[in-house]
Length: 68
Image 1 (tube, rainbow, N blue to C red):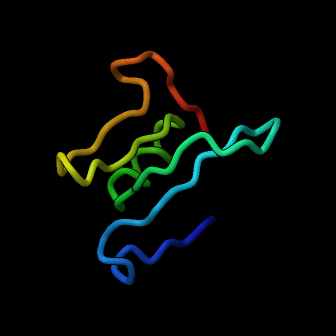
Image 2 (image 1 turned 45 degrees about the vertical axis):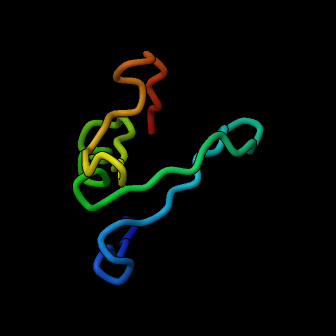
Image 3 (image 1 turned 90 degrees about the horizontal axis):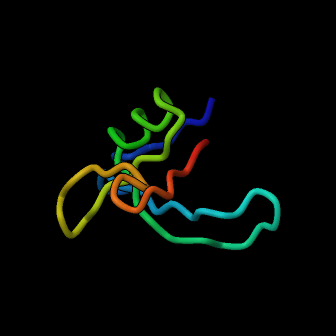
């Protein structure tokens, strides 16, 4: 189990998303503890939007869901 100290980083951490097969970097996003826990419980990647102060599921509007 991965342990992330969200408090140490001000409540959010940067997340680098890579293609599993190629290692290509796809995006940089952020997670807070709620996004991390929701990702672990659903198997679908959730992020935290700093500009909207809002949790979001990757692909909720585009359909490009990211599975863990």
